[in-house]
Length: 182
Image 1 (cartoon, helix red, strand yellow):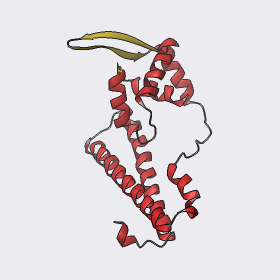
Image 2 (cartoon, rainbow, N blue to C red; image 1 turned 120 degrees about the vertical axis):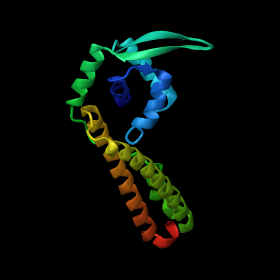
Image 3 (tube, rainbow, N blue to C red; image 1 turned 60 degrees about the horizontal axis):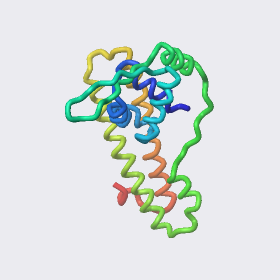
């Protein structure tokens, strides 16, 4: 399960609690992976049961006890083996593409409205990623860890640019002038 590897990757350099991992996940890997709280906590439990993670309980004042997770040697080895594997390309999972495949069942205006919504979302996501990229650009020298995080971020930027261009193409195909979309 790829989620387990994504969690090991997120924890490899900085141990944290499940709660903090969810927040980190939403900020750092959302350009190429997403998971719900429940999925993350379930995967944490399995990784710990399989001894790929260890945890330390930390008592907190006026708050529930939290568990800080750390990648074990076994987890590090598992992650390193996985990095060397060549995976099949994952299929695109897109609600939009399913909707578009049966677009003939609704008025063209409905499709254009839907495409405009996705277009706007991709533009906003692109702005967010570009803002993060500026932080990397301001650093005089990137650490080796940051270099690889930056490469992943660049892939996210490219994906957003591709979706934006495709939405423009699709709306143009459906007869929507470009000026109205902006």
